[in-house]
Length: 406
Image (cartoon, rainbow, N blue to C red; front, top):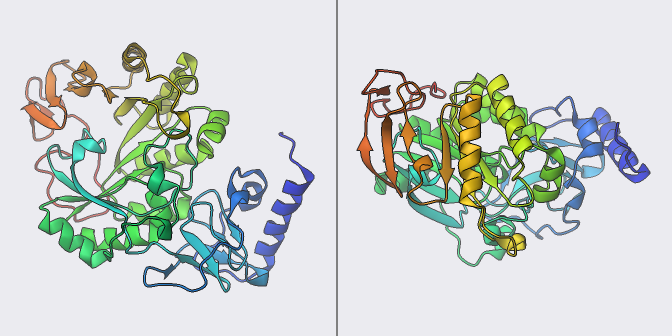
């Protein structure tokens, strides 16, 4: 058992005692709240007294939080479990305690909107060639040293000069206008705009539009289960297979992300795993072997795994790019261990950009950037040997029921 400071122990104990005696709002605290209050990494980094003086049109009361004594609240969307006194702002910068209630300040207020090819997410086994109407608000519940979108992920809603007013029903209209068959919640961290995402996703499901979640997967079980009811596909970053690296590189923990994979798998949601190979942090052969072994033991061989090339970004701008040879080696290692679909990203014209049948090994999908010149699937089966290829393919039809089997 790891030692903890007296201050952290007392702080965690106080949170637990308050939760035991206070009234609750929305959903109850998770069973491990007391432990999380003691051992959490960045929940103590809330912005004390940094909330706005008044709410604005993009404010919505949080869906997942608990009220405590003294008008304090605990946000329960993600494992940070931010404990906020009146006037405090959460770690993700998008939530505040206003007079004893938790509010999201980013509802209907995206800072980035674009129509992307779905391959950009990256999602390689979900309806190739379709468009994804993509949107993000500010904020993130991580502090990744290598963040590529830090200008919005590490900003508060009012700090970004260019934002839009686009409420859920307007997102649906905009997606239709752009002729996109899916909506992707992406770019920053959608967990931080959970209320906006799930309200939009519910309308999208009614409209027959796919919902795609591009995320770090750092979310608590109950909001994730609610999201699974309307989710069709996900691209989840597995930052490292080492808790210490997660803490140092990203400001989070490994286990909640692994729990997210298990939940998505159990609910038959198609998802693909993204592992950015950062030199000096995650380029460790033994760690990659342990990661692949966990994948095979817990969720099976069929969920695609992407190894992405790192380029200098943000606070790691002095590191070199990942050697392509390292990515190629990890791809071969993962496939030899039994992961059937392994890709290399951020490297043009690499064979790891393409999809090959795991049975006959023939080329199924050729990718040249975001263009697909070769497509050898018929009804989700290999045209050469008739093997079923895991994924959501052409002819799957519009979403009408929770999730899609992968």
